[in-house]
Length: 109
Image (tube, rainbow, N blue to C red):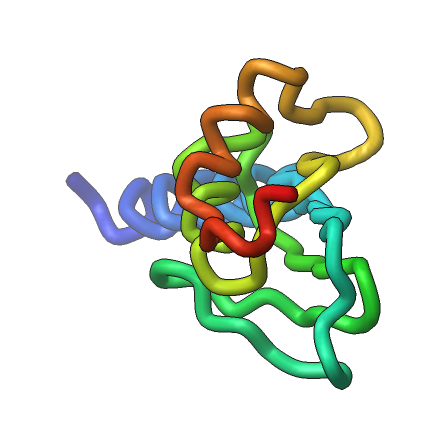
């Protein structure tokens, strides 16, 4: 392969990578809590850091579908979650029930 072909192939690859990263979507997840956190804080839930204030915790990420596992990890740290997801996708009642199985017993009420 000649140098000009290598440069052309490299340029095409870089253009494709730039376009792919520009189109990567980031979702803002919100979890609504049954009980407010005592003060604004960062909560480590599994491998993720949520920002929590009052009855709302938020995180940004590339996940197109809400995860019961991620909700469980948060519920284990902050208690019962009453809503989990982002505007276009959220856990349903069954997903929330499964999520809250991980919440401390006192927060289940």
